[in-house]
Image (tube, rainbow, N blue to C red; front, side, top):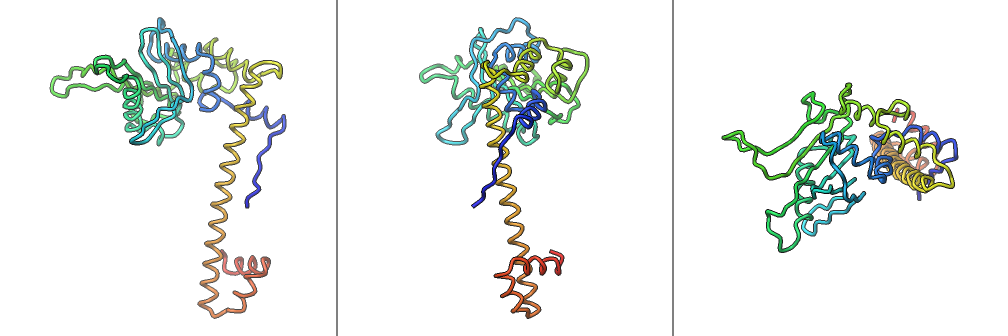
Length: 279
């Protein structure tokens, strides 16, 4: 049984914390526990300074009894009852168009209460904040809307999908927000709201609430590292077994039965044979 362990001392903890940016999904979820940060991000992406949040839920589970369920990074609702799903996506595979479509579909399914008419569906926004230009259009932001092909007019179903490409940085409000998402140091961040929150978390005090938040985050990192280490160990073990099987086949072809017997009980002898066959 594997005994792979991951433990962090104080220096390692500080190193991890110093390396965090808003594009780190685990850290971002802690940052967004302050809804003012969520509100500011939405105001900037939607270019609506009047937007005010009414409520938000982090790590919201959207079950689907007949198919694939989802756990949303951030689900929130504003004062005019528009709903928003914000997702941090560092990998292209996590921001595929059909994933965005599915997020929008489950938002609709869970926002319409039993007995309500379809006209009561809430206006929804699925927002993917991406590390790369996953749609390859060399745009800073993509607004995905349904249109009527023959007329070119909007379909007006009030379902919106937005991709915010944070790799595109300039002096616009969106460009500055993109830069904030990648900033390691709060002194290089543009938004006072975001920088204040990040500064408080990165310089936490053991007697403050932030300490609890960051300790939970560090435990999540420990579990993640443990899982990755175990997976790599399993991969390494599988590769080693494949090499031994290949060696046994080569020895059998050459009629080296005594070598096979000895290698099965002598680890050092086995390693020498692997070196002999350059395996």
